[in-house]
Image 1 (tube, rainbow, N blue to C red):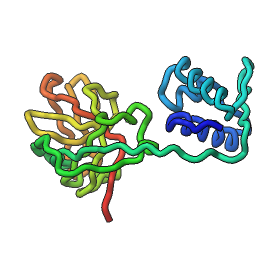
Image 2 (tube, rainbow, N blue to C red):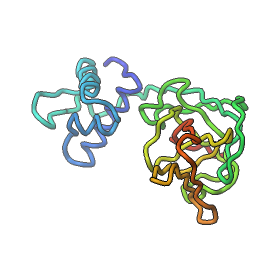
Image 3 (cartoon, helix red, strand yellow):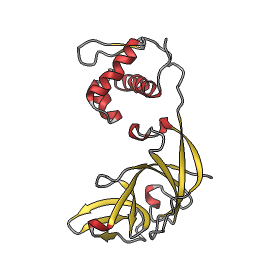
Image 4 (spheres, one colour):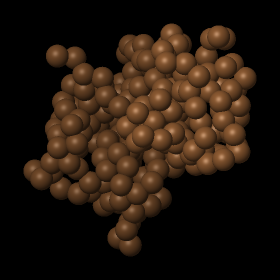
Length: 207
């Protein structure tokens, strides 16, 4: 059989795991939702898997069938992630955009919308205001570059030329940056004084 791309391998693994756990194959909609992609994109990946001989399918719902019993060799994709300065998880701390080191991260551990070189950065965490979210002093927070975030996401936010990591909440009072430690207070700012720089997607920790 032909070798799979990284995305095709992940989708094939998802189909196999879903079928084993649920006793039936996933629908195209369930695949698209899991990978945060549109239905036509999911169809395109499935057609590629079908052409390469890994699955068979018909027009009926839940008709996906694996055509092998052993998973093919994993196609590894490693991204180079720059670590830019330091970030406060207590009070905001100025973060100079200077690469202090570069991490090699397996893209398979990242969301599908972050598996592109240059789309992910790391920042060193200082303080413990995000302790209850599992983000500890000394961790490297992995974040996806974006200026847009959903309510409730962990964000890298620039406030008055200082950078911090907090839960984002949009309220009538303004932009609220919530800690994950009761010893710290919620910070409230006017909407035009907060710039989103990224959304947290993972951690690197050295023991």
